[in-house]
Amino acid sequence: MVVCKELTEQPEPFDMRFMGPRGRYELSFRPGERPQVEVAGLGGGSLVWWVDRSERRDGGWELSGLTHATKPIWGDVYWFIIHTAGERRVEYWGDRVIVRTDLAVS
View 1 (tube, one colour):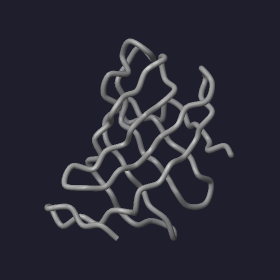
View 2 (spheres, rainbow, N blue to C red; view 1 turned 60 degrees about the vertical axis):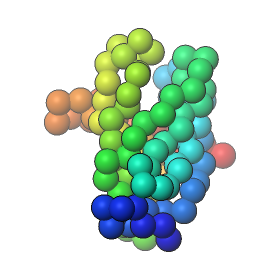
View 3 (spheres, rainbow, N blue to C red; view 1 turned 90 degrees about the vertical axis):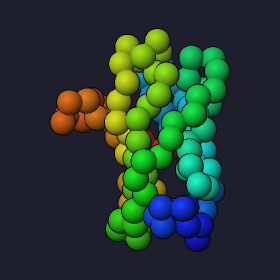
View 4 (cartoon, helix red, strand yellow; view 1 turned 90 degrees about the horizontal axis):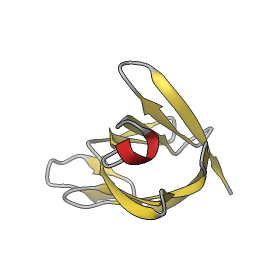
């Protein structure tokens, strides 16, 4: 386990692939003083989303933050929540509502 300077627990690095409305994409979590999710496969380039919250949940992790730089691709910026346990998924939230949920794929 890695601990950032704010003493927030973080998981070890991991990669997850998802199927979204525009096809497959990959989220790669990288822990550290400023934990981040590297995003590949959206809009032909790569993006970085900063993780603002990391907590243990249901035997796995929940990581969340803002989807920086997605407005040109998806038309908006969302709050994301990555769930690594149970039904592995990423949820995208708008103004207190889930806009969509993408499920992890092999």
